Length: 226
Image (cartoon, rainbow, N blue to C red):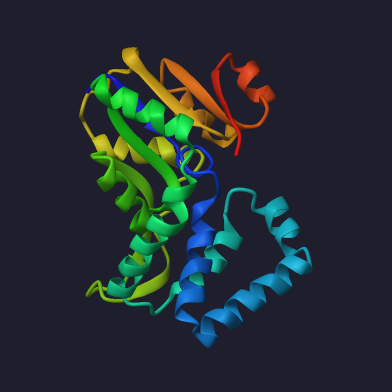
């Protein structure tokens, strides 16, 4: 496969972090006491600055994200998909970054293979890729019961972040020969450097002002503002 374009999603294509916000959206729509209790417990931990301790000793574990995800335990897959579609239409779609989306659409016209690689949840990102006819989505997956009917409130496998993105890309394409001689990647965060170093060109997406790490790595940059 040649002419590859990797796109991070949160704060790259959409102007906010979508994963935790999705859990908040589902909790507010469901209004279940168990979800409210778990969220209250998380807020207490954050107020006690417990997250600073976790980040210090487990910097790449994403413990807070996993704790928050527990709120979705027991939600039916049908209900979750219904909420996911509404979340995409009402929360994500109005907050897409037009400059970056225009780049994506332009690359599509030039026959690039667009691949969204995100730590956001596939359950709602699939509605974005469907709308824009993007064939490839690599994202954090939710775990469901063996019959597929109930969310288990945890991730299926690891969070799709940092070096895990590169591992997911390699696993997704398997033995397929990826030609990076005509390739480009987009991200807002230096945590995506492992993925961005795969491609011939890389573009940093920045809100309002340039980022130093973009200059340090001699990357191109898209600067946008609300």
